[in-house]
Length: 149
Image (tube, rainbow, N blue to C red; front, side):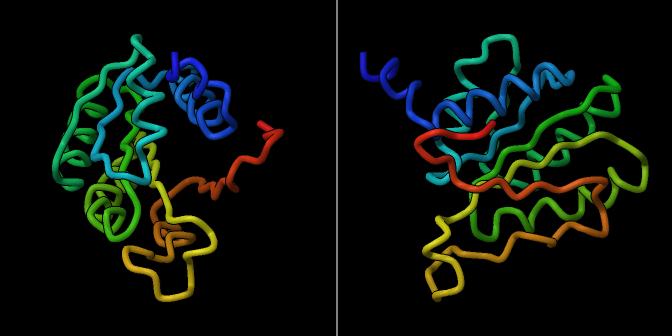
């Protein structure tokens, strides 16, 4: 089965580990606003049956739904978006969550490194955008043939 073969590839492995770790840390809902760059993470989330998934066409809707859910359940919620300007639509919710101490985890896919800073479309500098309203931020490198998880 091709899907099983793909699970062994470094990117699929990383994505599976990320989703597994979110679940281990108490995330029981992932709000998805998917696009082509976030597909491997979306597929990993789809395979994790213990986690609820809700799909949104608009990142703002995903973010505000996640905020309401996190407030109501007192649980962290993950929001997964694609690359480009998608992350900018999360800022209003992030500000509100930060000021109220509501746990949200933003996962924003990014364009490949070789397309950054060369004028490629849908490429936005993501590093540091949310620094004033986050407790922590990670910029994961692309997985190699032997990913260091």
